[in-house]
Length: 276
Image (cartoon, rainbow, N blue to C red):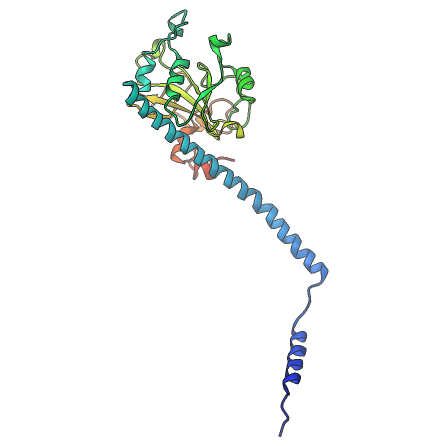
């Protein structure tokens, strides 16, 4: 009769068997494994961060778009006119000629009353500081930076350069332009308004956190589209030149694609695929 293991002998036998089945990792193998993990992390983490940043920018854009429209509705309820209609009424008391009759600063101040929280002037321009237009040096002085084109290139001019710059309680910046003077007096869209959706946080580029919108006769705020900055077009004649990394200045219609989340080149999402 074969003698069986005692309890102690069985435990010892099991330990011996397990030891034979295990093989310890060498230091070299551990270092190689850690190196591979590090390489994978280095490749994926930056992209994850970038995707998160673009998601935040998208959310801020939608919030700004919603706030612009809500304020426009409250404006009409309280003032009895749409922003578009009121822009034809309000006059600049310091106007020296017909081209200066439209009071962009007065309209912006009145409009900003209907944002949540206290809005205030971030800085003043035009007659208030002797500036003829809100050129890049004025942006630099007031904001501390100059809003750049989509590809990061410097903009010698800005699409909104008629009013003071105002900021709301969240730190966003708002600037208004005029689109209703002279030959534009019969248009049904305007004036334009430019918005920095996240304040000074950056990247401070049109198409990322700076966007151009326009007020309509029907009291809506819509993305600005047009062949140039002086006229609104119902259709984009050539989308590839309106919001493109190859263009240095004509990137003011990106809000059109940002709102619909469609890439200007026709490939995928604006926020996920188009933005770099």
